[in-house]
Length: 331
Image (cartoon, rainbow, N blue to C red; front, side, top):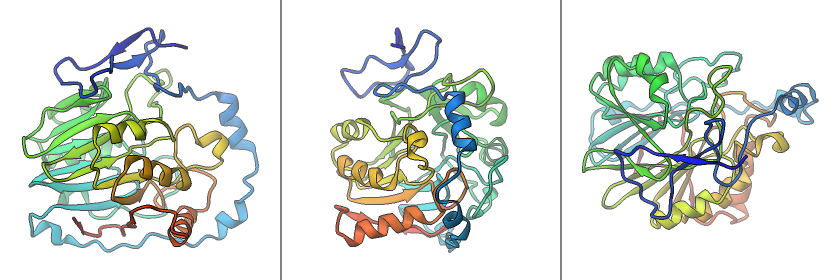
């Protein structure tokens, strides 16, 4: 279904000059620009009832993430990046402190392999809370209530129409919603942008694609970080490089990609994540979205093994950096 209109936040600037706005179809649902997608029940049932060809391998896989839980970031003010698990990150840039997609607790009907590093109460001096989209492994009510309770003055940055979901959980915090290729109103010390990802959204029975999903870019005068959000592979990585030609760190999901016939529209495989890293032209690749939750058919440690093999074969053009949970990564 072709979009018939476009949406944006008219209070925020759009950084892509030829961009008409985020596309919306005739059902008032957001649409991926390149690959329109709506999940279909027959495909969901096919995946649910088919046998996983890697079932025994997955069952026997004893890979688990390592915890460092290094709290020294609380004693310094250096630029740092800390992976807390899945897609949750703490980032400090130019003294500005950001938390992305906090999910500190269990997700319904989903096995959890690893607990997140640290407790939410530790993050009591945040400037911004970023929510990439509304899926429960990225947007958790209990976590958001905890974070906003100890940070009553923070600002939430997210996608269009997400404010109706987040407002009741956030203790009156300011919420900015952006369309794709828009820049949030932030401190001069750190610019933050919302870019497309190839994904979808759903929180309730009748709200499929009513709230926007996306990626983030963080930029200071001398550093740029790209955060992919949940995404399948697509042209949006090349477009991001056009707008941000000097990306220092690309944080890209590498898990929840099998069976690929079903998952490829929404989650990127390790091989395609490497291709995306190359298309972004970034210097350092930090994988995420693996090792924390059981969301798909691949064995829990398979993304790491594939990436290490590609690195050994010198097929990754740049630095590959695996983070332990709670590790302080200074850059």
